[in-house]
Image (cartoon, rainbow, N blue to C red; front, side, top):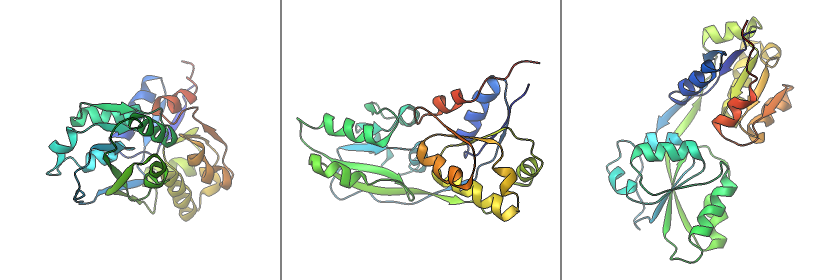
Length: 242
């Protein structure tokens, strides 16, 4: 039995996720529902003492920035292993990795600077994001400057082949990695007039936050025990070889 899956993640992450799923015997289609756009930004006047990263997309958006070399010499605090790996590939040498969610990242940073001097933290962020790092770290005496380095633009329509797959009821599951892409999935399905069919597959979600709009629309969802790619992939049952 072959499990037929749709991955809604932009490349290169979407391609990597698809490869990992195919290695487990799944049949995978990739359709990025968000278009990532890089945003020019300036560094704060006060030199930062560390960099905060919650998305590999932020590192990709800063690849050609003239201050890239100076930033990679700073300590980097990442939300999880995927962002840590992206930071390592970008050239950061000192990397502190949290347990996959923003609460653990705040705790990690607060603990790191509890007994030391408190540097300015530079948060490389997307335009649309949950939470407020500056407010959450302020009680710990830490100041955060947020640099908006990319935006994720929602697509209005599914790619034609994906719309056909959903309309034909030929998918068994859909993987969602952000609340924004889940909302985009619902919007695209509604505009195509196939919302009921698009909600029928099982929807695998990176976190409860990601699952919210899908569950509210009536979809059956499964949430990863940890907000990490590997944990989400593990949710998908290995198909039996026929």
